[in-house]
Length: 275
Image (cartoon, rainbow, N blue to C red):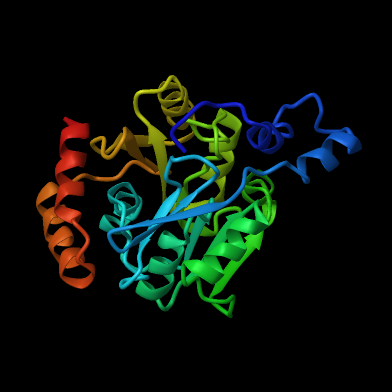
């Protein structure tokens, strides 16, 4: 997720984006639906299993003895929407990775519908076989689909409370989908007080491009502090929140008590971003 952009897979995902000159060409549409994926590979170290796309760069991780725990700090930050939404009805993940966010959301919110959208069938298969992803049921839907097709479907407009976007391929240091049109579609898919979290890469030119596109589409965008090899999680609010930091610290304490996630650090990060 943290190396060069413009792989075949990235181009295949992006080719039919909003406004594309090729969008009406059947041959182009067929090509987008059959991208060439990088190989899905695994490694293990110190009790943690890692997912790769044929490189050393990590696409996700799972502690083998705690398969439902969110191992990576940036992935924990992707759940920071919990500070503002305590009873989500519909949680959506674009880009499955190891299924860490999907599994956590499914276990933590038993009343919510949880949807994950993943284009690569090999990622879906390895999540089930090696990363303890549960099978689909009446609450969980893991869909093999292009994220752009899913998020632009008029049928989901206004239906998502929490949208988690982590769209990287083997050679992209920035998200595969990053246009203003994409983020406008994300905003349209959210409920009135919905929140999107996005994994960005802070020291790459894609960072500024994505922030500009998100700020065009959303009422408020705040970024948490950089972690790992440069990961920056942005929170995009469809409607700007009232940032009562005393209340947010109380909410963070509740989240820490219930989940063990370091929610206090999220509040501190938001305070710094809002200053």
